Image 1: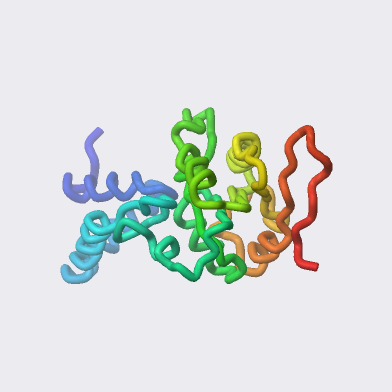
Image 2: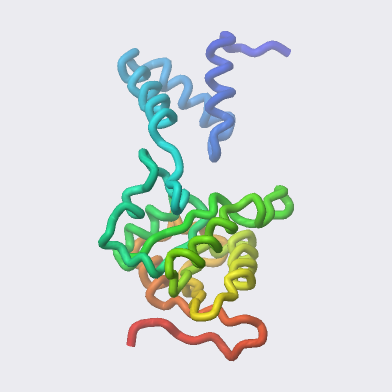
Length: 214
């Protein structure tokens, strides 16, 4: 059955529908909005997309988004280079930064372990994380993956591979709802989760130790 829209309109709807979180009806609404606005506004959006694709890449150190070799956080000498906060995606860096509770640096895994989707440790930036721990004098790694099945599986794997003498591995506290995502957490909840993080002990180690202030 043919489409009711002109080919160029349907192509636009199809392209928008491939974006994450955009269903068929949302894609139609966005497409119709873009067709109704004046040409300059539509061109401004198109230029922003093209410019971002041309200028933005991944930080050579932490794999956050960056317009140069290093992201702004890695290039900031005022950050504590001995503490790493490990997150799944660049948007999670923004979520943690909003709390103003963390002054260390980050490592972005660019995903989480999800065997159903064919994503294993080798598809993530875990090898690079281990290299940083060995070369940058890291004393603590805060595992700040999402509190869902994939995030917990990733956290468990990281706990096992980060078995380095003198290295503390902690996990953010349970102030975040199970099954939620960091990017949707409010600043107060995520800040308290960071403050109340606990050391993640190996299976043969004593019970977990509280790292919260006081």
